[in-house]
Length: 204
Image 1 (cartoon, rainbow, N blue to C red):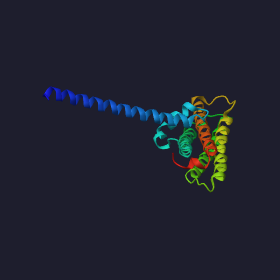
Image 2: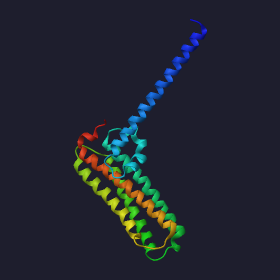
Image 3: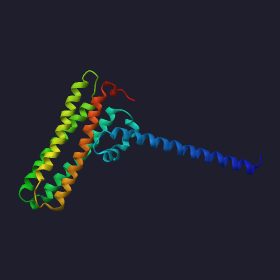
Image 4: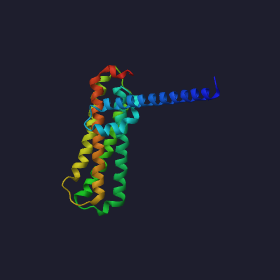
């Protein structure tokens, strides 16, 4: 075979191999996207769910227990971020607040500490799921997650109807609201795990 023909065939081989690699990558991406969309279909805030949990697709796949754990883990991270913001707000902005907003900020700091505790308890249960204790674990898990969501809403209620506070308080309320959305999604994933039953403890 002439040198030119061999070079042409080599180029064709490289091209086909490259196209095949792209096709495999696209197929993997579609599968991963399908996993997270399926998991998030039970949540109220689906776009946020997909955005926040997409990176877990290749590990969680079709496992309700892994998706529930991912949802709670992400929520813990967000709750800690909000808590740090509350601390900074108190340290640098507290004197500018007036009336009920001051009390609301302090109450919010207390409720978010409790939120984080409840979420950590939930994650602890998810890490130790067992067939023997599944029903009682799901009961405790639902209780802890519901309490975390209640705490976050209590924080928001403290600022309800209050005037003033400026951009910092508005930003705080938006951050807390986002945390409630993530917590709601995580609770929905926990509920899906509970309804999936013992079979959900087996990897897909």
